Length: 167
Image (cartoon, rainbow, N blue to C red; front, top):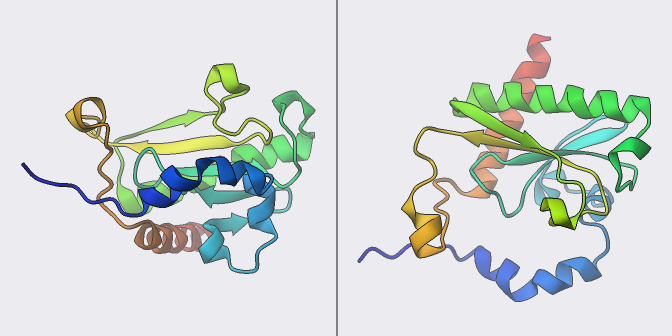
């Protein structure tokens, strides 16, 4: 039997309840000075791109407004526009660096809709490859991530910078 080691998950398992105690997971990250440590890839005027610390797939990022808003209809027009503009920017960067075969995009509004954190609207961008969902999540209750999150951050940041320079 092959063993898969995912030591980074232990912090999540041990501290899932503590993440709520720190306040908003999005608002708290923007206040830190180190974007790489915070996993913030890009800061726009009203919204930003941040990597998911516990991704569904390698390259899973989120786009969210700076303003702490839990309902999509409460966003201002500029926030909605930048949410979509940054979603497009992130997709271009991910395509450039990771060559996915597709994407899942989504906003889960409310706990009943599957929102893990429903107090602050955010768009999920999940790159997908044929066969990336296999028996491991079902049988082994594990998701195999083929790349370290810090390496993915560097790749996506390079891709974002390249896309921005092309524009």
